[in-house]
Length: 348
Image 1 (cartoon, helix red, strand yellow):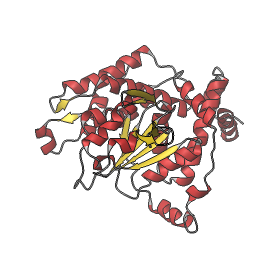
Image 2 (tube, helix red, strand yellow):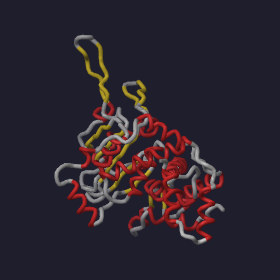
Image 3 (cartoon, one colour):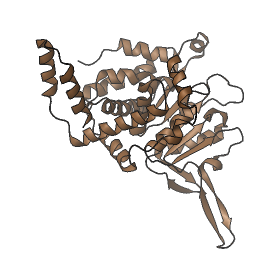
Image 4 (cartoon, one colour):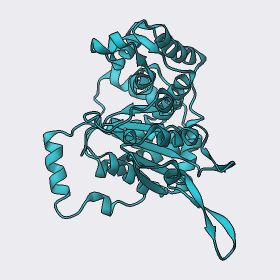
């Protein structure tokens, strides 16, 4: 039974005899029917969320943010303390959609060739043969990305922006889709290299998973008493369905008024006196795409202002470079973005 049909059935079961409730329900049920392609894409999102929730206990909305970035072609930076499940989440996503998964442990001695690949000489054929690096996959986990040198970090710039890499004067295309989940520890900075602004701008969203509640942590102990839930996780969608989902996200409607609203939000960051470098036009583009994806996950064929406001902080805040005085005063980029969201009028 499709998701929306199940919702309507549940509403009918709990409906009170109140006339106002009856009229409201009737207006919901009489809405134009959703297209079959959209219903299929929404059910794919529901399956992915449910599958990830079997392994990742905690805030389901955070998982949906990750799926939104994944389904719109963006990348995610998870900044969180060790042990919150960042690696497990990346593995669970790859298993759920039958995608190729690779993990790179970033260290100070890691070289760009370790990520991209290199040519080796074949003595039998008397030719050089290219050996692909770990970047040639669908889902790449860049673990503790800020522990590698800037030279190594830059190996991801072209790949994350253009889905290709330039190696030995040749352009090699990466598999479609290509999704990077990078992690970094916000607590310890010894032996780390802060990500430059150009690298941060490649990430569609930056957020943290956070600690689970007391009850959820107890449930985690029980679930992992004998084996990790990841070992029993099974694919819930096919790779072809994943491609269908990404194509359907592009069909989610967004009005011209909301496009102007997005641009106004992003452009306002460039006028703040506390900011040295505001968000780029790429931020506007990613905010629109992520909003389309999250609207689809929520079951809407169109983007609403509240979705844009919800995603403003994870999409925009990490792209802002604050003035030195603002940083010393303890001002956070997230606070500035929240103030902008509260001050700019929503299109009527």
